[in-house]
Length: 583
Image 1 (cartoon, rainbow, N blue to C red):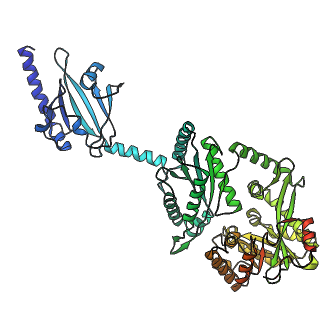
Image 2: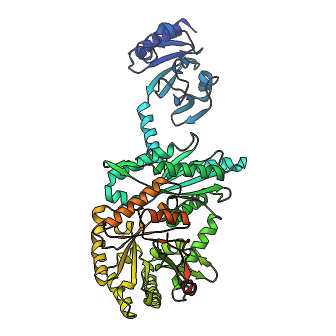
Image 3: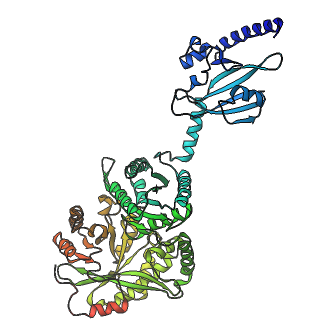
């Protein structure tokens, strides 16, 4: 280099040093040999390393590696060719890719939980050779945090902090790809809270939100670190087991979840009780796709809800088979009543003190030639959804009254379950009166069973409807008592004559003292209000004796008799003596 060129270079370097030192942003200069020639005050403040430590060294990049957990940062060299980029950084940084306005060099840099972008401008000599580069550091942490926040909100439930449906499906898809390579099973557990809608309506949405957050924490406490607990929507949660999944591990997890949720929640100053229904599905037995597994687990969960709340059930078959069968069932239901495919079975109720039969409960059954016997838990919700339940319900009442007339000399009544749609029909009392008048049947031959949860949807309207039915002489029973959220103030206003204790409390009274005490409390409460108490689901003599001990009036269940078609019921009633001896 000529003396003249050297002078120009020295003058320009002096001016460059002044510019660098005056820049409020952290800025440093690299020479052609990668050593630092300038290191301004902002750089020193950011790194804690002064010019005396850095100038003459090649530690510029190392000065910004201050954390073991790296994050992505960008280095953009405006207007530089690939040869310049390779000259300055090729040995250290890969890959190098072209971007508008220059070259972007991707490296992983984190500095004290900050994300930094370095923008570099090459310095060229008069002969076009690379003399070095000026690099300016910018803190983009706020942008990064905002980006992470948006990503978090897009993939997590804002109320519970759990992964949402989108993140769950992504993780399940990844787990299935991994499982397919290793031929390992993957488990899906669908947890649905029972009757949570009533909590929201009865206690308010803020209380409901607090309970959902508590449920989320309890479910997280039931799983391992590598498992995913997600909020699937509403009151449903899904747990993904990507490692060591088996039918045994899924069953154990379901039991842990049920036990965790069964612990009372504190709500509005008193204990609130929740139960859950759990559906289980296992890859590849129950499905090989994300949608298939989720559908199978959710379907099993809904089946538990309709049959025996507070339990768990494994999926059966494939999602495709289940979907095809549901379509066939829905289609066949349209003509089922016209084709006389429905029938009634009758389950007797017996008095505990002497074993005498007091009446029957009419239960709807459906037998379709190609489909076979379809469970009520499957077809009744479909009748509800399509609105056909009102028409079918009228038929059930007429058939039940006809059967009751056969036993008029023995003073036996027939109980019929009302659906939610029937209860909220404005002309329900007129429909009942028409069915009774058509067959000239006394109103007290008919007993209508209504569940707690149905009444609490609109208690005031329910009271008006029940009073109209009661004034006609129709008997009224509160079914599944203890599983809903009715208050005592409403309970005493409902004109009911019978309270039926839900089978979930009866099932374990011989082994669970809490359940026995709950039944005792229901009996005491019911009797204080002048109501008759009937226990459902009685299967053993030991249960019968305990129920008699706590003062229960009547029982219903397989110990007495399973549901019987009309012909078999007649044979049952003609047997000599009562079915049960005194308890």
